Length: 251
Image 1 (cartoon, helix red, strand yellow):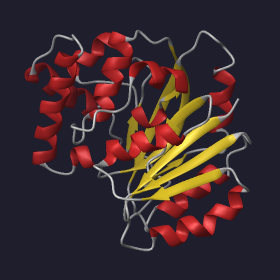
Image 2 (cartoon, rainbow, N blue to C red; image 1 turned 180 degrees about the horizontal axis):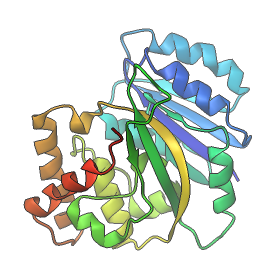
Image 3 (cartoon, rainbow, N blue to C red; image 1 turned 180 degrees about the vertical axis):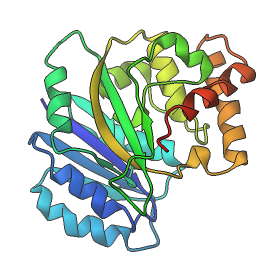
Image 4 (tube, helix red, strand yellow; image 1 turned 45 degrees about the vertical axis):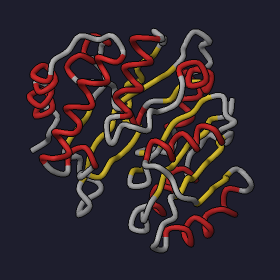
């Protein structure tokens, strides 16, 4: 079973080497690695070129203009030839070397459409100390109306799922991941399995939480995503997720 991993990058010189090395270190061998770069202006592409021969023909990459992160992710989905597809952001890295091996093992169950697990967050100053733990253990589809979804960096699905459900919507700025989750769970009723493990280590400071404006955009887009997919919600219901998220922090 081939697993395609997609990394979208733009001016990621500070983090992409760590990201790519974590893919290279995976114990599972049948991996296809795809990098979609948005015409980076820094040294990102030089790092990509340095890593390319280390993948021994299992890596492909492009660098071209795109219409935002979800357009770039869609390009990666088009390029992917694996049976299973997941996304690893350029500033994230796999927490352990056997993550993809466990993902592939889970998909030996033909009834499973997708899997997900946990992620943890770190600060750049200390990549070994978890400051926030995002567990997907208790997720149920009815949580979507509150803006709560499985940890999307841990989400791996059969490619045929995306072929049936469609690509990421490019008119979302930062809520396209959530819209995809709502669509898959509520409109396509995918069969999933939770894997009790940490998939990915993420650096704090993502696009959805960097300032008040980003949070307001996400609130509007999460509300829209639910309504477009037939899920009743209200902005006040979605705001409740922030009380839940406080419990994820490690002090």
